[in-house]
Each structure stands twice: as C-alpha cells, then as structure tokens.
Amino acid sequence: MPRQASLRTIRNRNGEILDQGLVLYFQAPHSFTGEDCAELQVHGSRAVVNAVAETLRAFDLRPAEAGEFARRAFEHGRLDLVEVEGLSDLVSAETEMQRKLALQTGMGALSAQYSGWAERLTYARAMIEAELDFADEEDVPVSAADLISVDLADLMVEMSAVSASAKSAEIIRNGFKVAIIGAPNAGKSSLLNAMAKREVAIVTDIAGTTRDVLTVELDMEGYLVRLYDTAGIREAEDIVEREGIQRARAAARSADMILYLREAGSDPLVYEDYAVSYLEVETKADLYPNENGDAVRISSITGEGLDRVHCAIVDMARKTWHAGLPASNDRHREHIALASKFIQNALDEPRLELKADALRAAGNELGRITGRVDVEDLLDVIFSKFCIGK
Image (cartoon, rainbow, N blue to C red; front, side, top):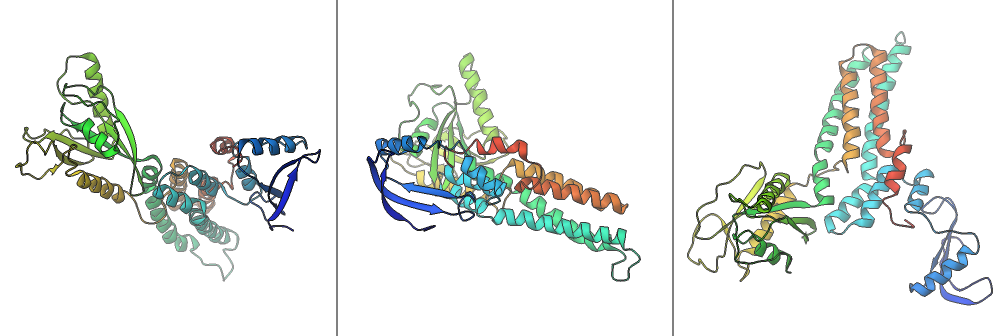
C-alpha cells in the first residue's frame, strides 16, 4: 500500500538474502519529487548498502546525481527555486541560527512574500491595461494609474527593507567575522586559543610570532562566529612581518567586529578607523590585578573576563539580525534591485503603455527569484551544490 512502511526481507535476483528492512512506496504525485518513488530503509553498514546498490544496478537503475532529487522536485512543481535554496542551506546547516534561516527560506515563507509582491504588480498592470482598453467604460476608474501609485511606492519601501536585510542572512550563513587586533605580544593568540578551548595558534614571548591571519570557527549560542588572529601591528622592517601586518589590517576592514587588545598597564591604544564596531580589551589581567578602566579586562590564563568577551560578541551578532524575512542571498537581492528599478520607471513614466511594460519587467524579475521565469542557466549551478542523492 502507498505510504505504508512494511518490514520485508530484501533479496538479490538469485534469492540470496541481503538484509531485512523497511520498504515504502510513494505514489505520484505524493512524493518529494512528484514521481512514483520507492524507499528502502536498510542497515547502514557499507557492506549492506553496497550489496543492495549492486542488486539495484542489475535492474538498470543508477545512483542519483548531485541535486537530482531536488531538481526533479523543482521540475514537477513540488518546490520553487527559493525553497530549493533553503533545502540546500538546511542540509549544510551547522548552527541553530543557520537551521532557522534555512527553514524560514525552505518552508515557503519567503516564497510567499515574493509571490505576494508579484500579485500586487499583476493587479497594478491589470488596472493600467483596463484603463487603456476600457477607458470609456463607466465601471473602470478614470485614474487607475493614480490609484496604484501609492501601493507601488509602498511596495518599493518593503522591497528595499528586505534587500537591505540581506546582510544579516549573509552573516548567519557565512559567519560573524571578529578580528583580533593589537600590538605584538598583546595576547591575541592566547585569546584565540582560550576562546577556541584548544591550541590553534603558537604562543611565545617573541614579538611577531604570528605572521599570517589564523581563523577559527565557533558556535556561539547558535551563531557561527569566525575569529581572526592577526599579526601584531607595529612599524616593521621584516618583509614577511610587513605582509602579515597588511593582512591584519585587511582582516579588520572586512570584519563585522574588532577586538582591540592591549596589555594591561601599557599605553592606551591608538585606534585605526575601520568603520566597524569594536571592543577594547585589556589582557594579562592576572599580572596587573589593580588596574581600573573602561576596557574589558581578561586573562587567558585564569579565564577572567572571557565570558564578557563572549557575551559582547554574541550581543553584537544578534544586533545584525533583522526581524521579518531577509533576502536569502545576493541572487535575490540583485533581482529585487532590478524589480525596484522597473517599478520606479513605471511610477515616473506618464505613458500608460510603457508604464505597464515596466511593471511586467518588474514582475519577471521577481519570477526569476522563485524560478518561474527564465532561470534555466541557473539550475546546474544551484543543484550542483547538493550532496549525492538529495
């Protein structure tokens, strides 16, 4: 019976028992792909899986290619392109916030938002075309273009807000970047190791030990955080150290947050302007117990103050998250920007024929996000990111 699990003995063509497992049959269109589909749940050892796979090959069956199941689901209308991208993100999610973002994208909420925008554009076009075709009819508003202009302006505001929030989705997906900056021997590598709870960076008393940017990924209360340990910033003559300092400054410029480190008891930092949020941190607090100041005091030896650094990073990461549904990625943002441009053209255009044409172009851009319009060239790229059999 369809969609009922049955315990069965699984045999090869010669009647030899391969395993005992569950067999399920999904009849089209009630399956993930929308096609007839059978599922075997066998014991997961490599020997069992290989034996069952070899038997299936004998029936001229083959393994699915990367993303093939998701692509078939898309082609049969079971998923749109936004939901496919959400599914891909869900499969690769490693943190709680990545899981939530993927579900928000893959369960249809974001698609519904885009579809709602498209329906408003379709209504606006219908009003304009009605004015063009039936201007003499009494039941058609005389100034349909004026009636829709307010909603189109509101729509542009909504689209702009969603597009602007794409940065928060990017941070959730790719990580909140925190650069650890300071003078040589300020305790940057020690802080990295303490936060990671393992020896990631080499720590010595020799100034300039760190020559390149070291990275460690941490899951901080559901947020993926990338900590960057950098070379100590100073005037250096060594060509390799100078390159390391340039990379440190580049890491600071691309960071979402900076931890400015200085050894307790040393002179105050001269901050370089990187136009990002920063936290001043005094290190080696165990050696200078009587210091007072506004900076967060830490000791990588005793653990003092590390919880405050942790909380400061998490609080800053949370501030990047926008309520509502953010544009999931740059592809969405590009099409939203183009759609907004066409809507603005429609608002500025006095001729009704060209106004309607601009709205049609705007609707097509939204359709390209969900895959309803002209996206064949994107499919190979998107589905190739899936694992085999997904």
